[in-house]
Amino acid sequence: MRIRRTGTALAVLAGLLAVPVAGVPAHARAECGAANAALGRPATASSAEGAAFSAGNAFDGNTGTRWSSAFSDPQWIQVDLGSVKEICAVELSWEAAYGRDFTIQASADGAAWTTLKTVTGATGGTASYEVAGSGRYLRVHGTARGTGYGYSLWEIGVRTGGGDGGGQLPGGGDLGPNVKIFDPSMPAAAIQAQIDQIFTQQEAAQFGTGRYALMFKPGSYDVNVNTGFYTSVHGLGRDPGAVTVKGVSVDAGWFNGNATQNFWRSTENLSVAPYDGTNRWAVSQAAPFRRMHIKGSLNLAPSGYGWASGGYIADSKIDGQVGPYSQQQWYTRDSSVGGWINSVWNMTFSGVEGLPHRLPRAALHHAGHHPDQPGEAVPVPGRR
Image (cartoon, rainbow, N blue to C red; front, side, top):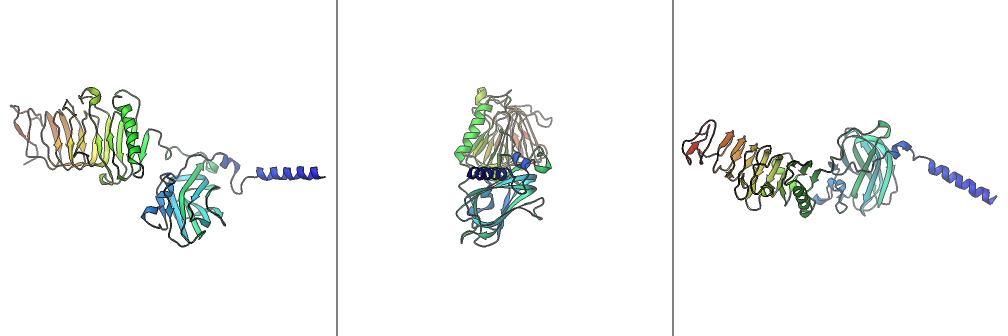
């Protein structure tokens, strides 16, 4: 009789373990992805204890930073996943100030919310909750604190999958291993190490297969971005002033100081505060320099002043002087410069403020003009 009861109990227990969690289809749980769809996404909250405890800290992947609310109920924190996704699990890592009662909610528009999970009597720590629903926005809405302090979360993870809505649409997820996104909270040495590693690979890879995008979130970075072949450098702010680095640099050491083959690279939408006051961008075509603010001077020639053969500046501001030196030709449009100190052959300008009335140089082809004598000062078209 005892053996029979034990067998019955085991059968009942096995049956209970086989029952899916309420409201979560078994196939949805099986398809739940491992990636955190909320990592680095825009976040907001009902309040923050201070500037050092903003909502974004709960989604930055750094377990040493946290969001902390005001010391009152209710409070909420939410994240924008970028597009509507099937949400299958939410992971909460609480600091000592935890939420005792809260709901996990989703919304397609950030206004109308659907409750995915109601939690009461929680005790903090790290917990994972299986849920089933869809939304672009995920919110944790606290209604009762577990302590006299506010709500405080180290990290919130959001797992997504196919669910009833089918597989995820392409795009909007991981941008791939060759897209590097840097955050000002990352150590400068770690960022510089990644930049240098990519540059070592790409410096002489004229016909290589590597392709890299280096993207900087708003903030200041004590790094110099040496820029090799097939490398694009971007600031992710609204304007160039949102991101500042110490350099976005191109030289020609790989080709014995000759920059005439420095093709296929670009930079856009950053400010540069050079270590020594001058940024070097020694390129030769197919290397646009757009929406840049150089807080100093700009040198368009390689160190040693070997040859360089052409480039393009647009929608930029250079506080100091631009020095083409050995550059054979250049086109600059809709920009502001603190001065242009010389020219070689073809220097073309359109809508550029700050040019001198005359450019001194040896031999200059400019808008069809060819000076007869080396060293002749040449009027700049459109300038009075």
